[in-house]
Amino acid sequence: MRFRLENNVLDADRRELTCDGAAVPLQPQVFDLLLYLVTERARVVSKDDLIRHVWDDRVVSDSALNSRINAARKALGDDGAAQRLIKTVPRKGFRFIGDVVEETAPSPAPAEARSASARPAPGRPAIAVLAFENMSGDPEQEYFGDGISEDILTALSKQRWFLVIARNSSFTYKGRAVHIRQIAAELGVRYVVEGSVRKADNRVRITAQLNDTTTGSHLWAERYDRELVDVFAVQDEITNAIVAAIEPQIHAAENFRAHRKPPASLDAWDLVMRALSHYWRVTRQDHIAAQALLERAIAIDPAYGQALSVLAASHMFGVHLGWAELAKAAPVAEAAALAAVRCDHEDAWAHTALGSVFFSTRRLADALSEFEQALTLNPNFSLAQGYYALALSYAGRSGDSFEAAQKAIRLSPRDPSLAIYHGIAGYARFTERRYDEAIALAREAIRHRGDLTGAYRVLAVSAGMTGDVALAEVALRELRRTQPNISLDWIATQLPWRNAADREHYLEGFRRAGLT
Figure 1 (cartoon, rainbow, N blue to C red):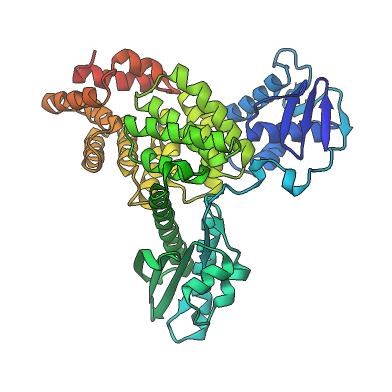
Figure 2 (cartoon, rainbow, N blue to C red; figure 1 turned 120 degrees about the vertical axis):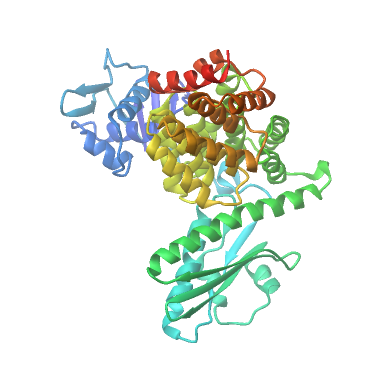
């Protein structure tokens, strides 16, 4: 269904708003809000209605709701003063009052003519999760192994990077002795996850391994021993641990595969895998290299959502670490992130990328909403969890920020960004005036990576506030090495605090540390 609103067309099937035929960039939640207002235009829509239908009953602040209303008005050429199309009804809600003409959307094009966004990226691998074998000798424990396998399959499906074979296909091998290469040939997969469950008394041992079917090798294997105090809690914990370990292993294997190809034969998937290997190294030079590879991938496939997402995230990561100028990077990153969301609005990477743009451009309510959406789509996505923790700190919610950062650390203990998550936890403690804990967390971050600006910032301001002159001097020297352009002016103008008091507290720590 399409709705004509003056010179705008709102296309529900394509999830697109156009003005005189030109696409109007629109955040997914703003689109959902606008579509709901238009379809319910015969009545006043309450705040509770919007939260139920647009935010799925999640807790939403008034400022976040109002920012979405304002964005919907702006997209249509309306504003809060004129209220020509979207009217605020005091103490009641909102109503769409403009003229609307409903049109039937044209029939979709044949499959072979559809855009590249509807097709999986070339070379994207497939993965199958086999039913975990019950080694307990007790048929009644079969449900536990099946539950672990199904949860892993469901969680991997949320990654959106790989094709995950449906349970109905992968579970047909349950109880059968079939060679892994036969499974690969029959299911058309490159990777297979298999494992076993052995339960005795109140303890359970679960083994899991990730196999590369093209080489027959094990990419990763782990064993988990747990007490079964709460069966479902153990099942969730182990599922999260396995999924968090599998994704980076597949990316590493795919990157190795891409590096074995001659440069002229690289397709979009190979280029993104190479780009990710640079992205996770977290250096200025690597991010520049990643961006070049991602731009090549997008040139091959302009509707490649994951390439667009990583490109946007890379640009904004550079801004926060002082490697890039906000004014230059933000427009490029926002265009890429919005395009990524349009390609796949259920991709957690896309929402994380868009959230990172909103974070650096001081739209904290929007940033938090995007990170929450990313974590709803993929609760095991540690990067989204880390960004969420950072945004919570700058929004003045330091306690929530610390908990979120700790969750990011637990989600992926081998994560390349582990040092960043420790630094974020340290900053949360700094904002709570718990300076000794902040220093300890900053040092832990530096132990993992000694070349990241965030940890040295936390160390410098915390040492400044405790009066540890020697430590502050060392921290400031290392900070200037990793971020030569650091200054009080850069801090005051480039970082997105909601509260002026939090900004002043941070600046005071730097002043006492000796920064000018």
